[in-house]
Length: 283
Image (cartoon, rainbow, N blue to C red):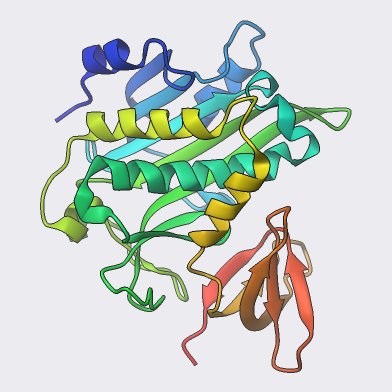
């Protein structure tokens, strides 16, 4: 079933996120359209680009994110500094935190069956687990987040939050798991039922609107984001994205206020990572 645009327009018309929806049935990527719209001065913060299908979607580290028609929730959300004026120089990382927390909140608010079963993998994959101990070998990745920003002389002009949530896909619709990464899953596979993507869209817009506004205290957002990070306490290998392509293995012990992951190796040496690809170690 396709998204109910009439319901979305009615419910979200006064919302800080989702007041304006740019809808597409099938496009290569919502991010590409969002970038063009964000460059236009009259485009308001909180505009959402949504597609029923992406044929060349992008995830983190240039990974592809393709989905069947009408099965996932695929959005790119334009955010401008007026909406997060109090965050100053930390806006990019705080927006990334907000996107992850909002996605987790939306899934939990969307259906009680997910309460207590949604977490985050640093920096911002969204995970599902049936187990209360959140064993990273048994969790599934249900959503991915990509945050891109445009700067001028060091100041953030706008950011785009790309969020893709697997909603009604079956096993046949999902790609195979990447080595060291949680296997892809969907809300349908986790709960054994199909879900209304329109209701999830509304829940996501409301959750993000609550988190991203001029009066939102950064510390409260950091605290919730950290509390949802299932990566902490796990043995991991972090591969940096630079040309050197180095890796560092150890236990993920903490995150800094700026959102960097702190990893401690077997000698007790610690390193902080602002970006990278995290694999969970099995031995």
